[in-house]
Image (cartoon, rainbow, N blue to C red; front, side, top):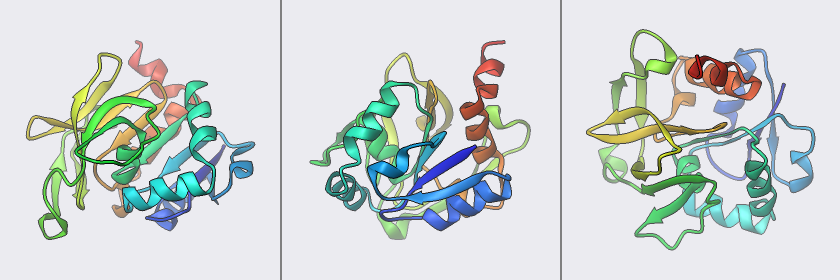
Length: 197
C-alpha cells in the first residue's frame, strides 16, 4: 500500500511516522499529480482555514472530491474532519463536502481548553483509546449513512462513511497504532468485511 499524507500544513510527519510503524509506505503530497498511484489519503490536523485555502491554491479540492466520489479511502483528523464535512457550522470555510456530516469548529473551546481523555471505540477492540483534543471539532449532525464510532458528551467525535474515516482528536500524537491500523483495514476492505458480518 501507498498512502499519501496531505502536506500543506499540520501534523504531517506524525501521520507518516505512524503509518511507517505499520510497515506502510507513506509519502507527503502537495500537488494533484502526486495523488496518482495512491491507495488512500490522510488529511492531518492543523488549521482548517489555512489547509482549506491551500487545498484550493494547490488545485487539490476537485481531485480529492472526485476520488471520494469513486469510493477512495480518506482519513481526516481534527482539521481533516472539518474539511471532509458537507457543512461547517458558523464558518465561511469551503469544505471538501464528501462526508454527510455537519461539524462545529473549536467545539470544546479555544487552545487553552484543549484536553485529553480515554475513549471507548468498540471497532478498535477492547480497552480505551487515549484521545488528544486540541481546539477540536465535533459532529453536530450525521446523516443515516454515517456510522458513529465514538461519542463524547453525547456528540460524535469519530465517524465513518464507506471508506471515509474522520475523528475530532489526534491519534497520530499517541503511541497507539490501532486507529491507523483500522484505517488501513478500511483501505484493504478488511474492516468493511468485519462490519458486514
